[in-house]
Image 1 (cartoon, rainbow, N blue to C red):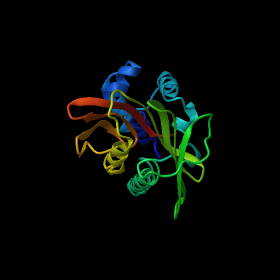
Image 2: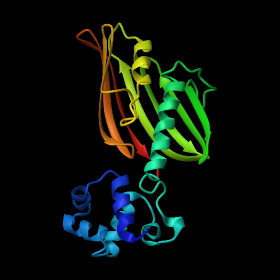
Image 3: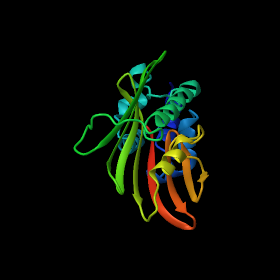
Image 4: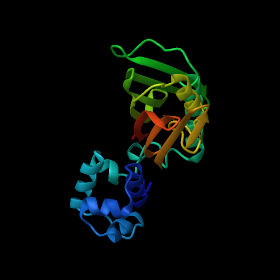
Length: 229
């Protein structure tokens, strides 16, 4: 992978536009564009700034050998990402959303759910672990052959009654492929309505969901996550 491609990939995986990165580094956007198009290379001060911003050593940025290439290049590739998203949807439907059984807790008083599947590319593993009840916090994550690839953190709370855990599970069971994080944009069942708003994609995203009973909000949750490098 040439330097310009690597710089563009690092920027995208860290969720910056060219304008945002240029502002972070106190540079002109055209400078960032020239780096990524191979028309210029960062000077030492620029490499140090990029290293500090992305929390990786400079040699991983500048070397062309395979050991220094970015994991999940272009989020692996489109076919690999599609496989991960398909697995993530299935894992969610087999665990919490599908009334799956909990496994042994990995932390004191945690609720853990786990799904694993062997594929041609390796063993894919999904774990969802959360703490709490009415107010709760947790993390979902994916691994392939023991290597973490993706994770999502969330914090939610029940704000009023009559909250229905079964309704929330029914909404989350409909996890869409284009936004495989929580539930669909809107889901209705009886007097309950679920909404989910997201920005970003599989590599870097954030969102908010809520549930209304008639015209009263009874639940809300914030979430964010992305690809692990």
